[in-house]
Length: 265
Image (cartoon, rainbow, N blue to C red):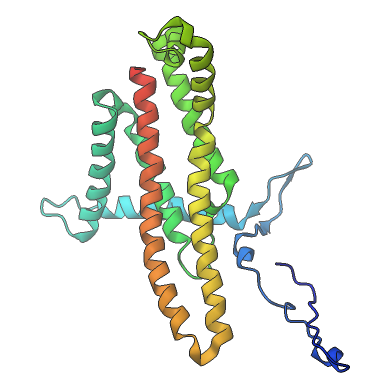
């Protein structure tokens, strides 16, 4: 997927006439994920530059703020469409916490709601032309997953103290099973941030790559590109569903981890 020169050879003495740089100038489907520096910042040898990823994270936060503040500015008894959408998002996350964590999860609502809205808007912004999908980078999704993992672990330790470690050895299990069960449970627990981040990253990256590939077919086929266009329309609709679904999956798993931290078994 580079920009090198590819040679096409054909039988016969005139094969050199067929040489061409078919890949020259062709844009890789993965080029849309490249990080580019907007404002270079060097902090004692550490590259802290403001990049396109940073820009779209800021845009996502601003978009969420405008959506919620603008939607609730009037606070009408009979809500309009904008207010209804803001209230729907609020009630959706509140219901998710209530169903999966219980009443003790109410104090974590601001964090869970912020997490859901940020991921949702970051995913949706990535579907706009000439935009950048920050959740297609494993470093971003792993940072979000690490915050969730460390947060719920701290909550569990503060609430239960050393009793938290009984999570890896549930009561009622025969002691003979401990050498087998405890390592499995520990590995499973430590794998949470990895699986949480990989799921979001892989889904967003794969979907956007497919859109780019079929978009290239439209250009190459010219007038016959109506078939790839149809596929792109269908893929785009699927990507909208995936963007919403992945925000939901990430958030509901966070709620389940909170439930484990608060209630253990």
